Amino acid sequence: MGRAPALLSFLLHILFLLGRVRCSAVAALGRRLPPSTDGVCARLIRPLGYPCSEHAVETEDGYILSVQHIPYGRRALAKKSGPPIFLQHGLFQGGDTWFMNSAEESLGFILADSGFDVWVGNVRGTHWSYGHVTLSENDKAFWDWSWQELAQYDLLAMIGYVYSTTNSKIFYVGHSQGTIMALAAFTMPNVVQMIESAALLCPISYLDHISSRFVLRAVGLHLDQLLLTIGIHQLNFRSNMGIQILDSVCDGHMDCNNLLAAITGPLNRYRDPCRSAPFGFPNRGKLLLQWVSRKLLPGVRTSSIIHKKPEPSFSNDPHRHLCKV
Image (cartoon, rainbow, N blue to C red; front, side, top):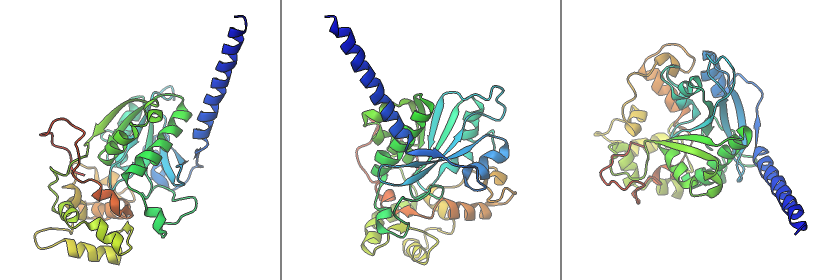
């Protein structure tokens, strides 16, 4: 009996060491980057007086993702971080989508000013992420993924990095594609144990309520399979091939001149033009659309869109209207 306490102490010590190894392994996948004049922090966050740092997080399959960190708001007196909250963008977007309006109307700024420790994710293939450890964007294998990998690798790596850095459970906010990533990732026990709670904005599972003619036409034509068959793995609407694809999908009944609105619906009429401008000066809708098309639409994995096909809904309410993709 006298050996039992010693054995228990030994086992607890081993478990403690294993826990430290696990956390260190997750933390080793990411690093804080030196300040730069590029990136979401430099362009959208620090100019408004908020502290912000850029981080690079490597996934298990070799992609290097961008994560932004806003530890507190610009009016914080104690300069002390509150509970961590992680923001995950939707399809065709990046982490900048949480900061494209004024500080009073952008969720990322509002959360920081409300005392949260804000972390912002950017998945593979987006403008703000950093590529791959061995592959280039010209390699077919670089684009060989869909939203399953975004949940299995990207979200796991980013959430793990934030958890190991803050040593605290995380509040999660996902939008559109960020919701299906979360629902898939939450089936993994090692992810769930790092999450405090989740808010899922515009959850996506069905195409039943999609009104965009462009999206419905692309799905009806099985556009992803057509592109893969002819060897196109990156859907870039600014390339010559992308323009030809648009010509074949669009017709007289579909206005594709405003490509973003053709896919997602009309832009928010109350968006601050100064915040949405590429260089921070006032402009009108055409310049905004040009910037959004340049920053958000290029480089889309061809199978990412078509995976949003009819399948069992995450909601038990058959009449629930889900948001546009």
